[in-house]
Image (cartoon, rainbow, N blue to C red; front, side):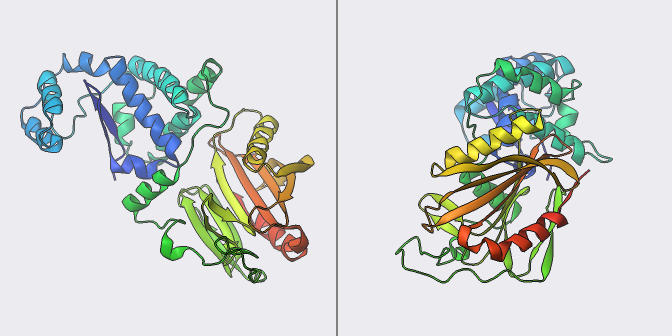
Length: 368
């Protein structure tokens, strides 16, 4: 459960399972690893090891971990050994600032968004309580960490479509935390919307939304919401969810698709200005769905008691073959992320979902 990571001179990086479990997406985990790679590249560990008295007892444990790896054994011998806890590599605030900035460059060059690294540090601070997470004990905040990384963004060659989450990450995290994943074969519905993606034969439309509602609270406490009792709540990760009726979601060769329901999640914004961040997010959604286009420009609304924007996009669904209408809502979270809620339904069924969507949206509560 401990949240930590450390790097040995020579480039060997160790990441605790608790760190993977705490990361909201692959981008945040990549941020931790980039930070550790930066410590190695900047030779911080070598400098620290030359000053430290490393306990003999720990060498044997690390050699067991190494499993007979001659190169790893040599790295351990060079630094004198330190035991399984290797947390002697405690760095000062200057080294942390350097690793943050160098790590941001490493992330950007690898196709990730450096803001995910900043968001992970902010997540750790919120988890602290009376006991500071080990990572922050060994990697002290140099001050205004999130702001410093954000200010460095203009200098980075950040991808217009950075990697933030992958199916591989969700599967690994699910194995560590014991959670279920949407792509679990036994959980996949056999039919998807009006058509089966395998044989394309007509199928029954999803059942009409129930008039009774069920409460959902995200594991990270970022939001709570009520949704129809006859819908499923599908966990993508701690902060990203799909709420949909059976028969309206499933797996195709192109990934997970939903024809009726609601997507909820949070991502690192591409701008500190909400309107600009919203426009960038909507543009990204349209680019991922070439047949869709914006049919109603962003309108100022309220979402979860906060200033927000609502944008309507529509296009022909590759699954159902009919026009689908999506409304994309975005607002800023307390920790600086862009919270989104997307409602979706075929145009000819909007009448069955309009009231339900409104009730779900009105029930939304965001962490303060």
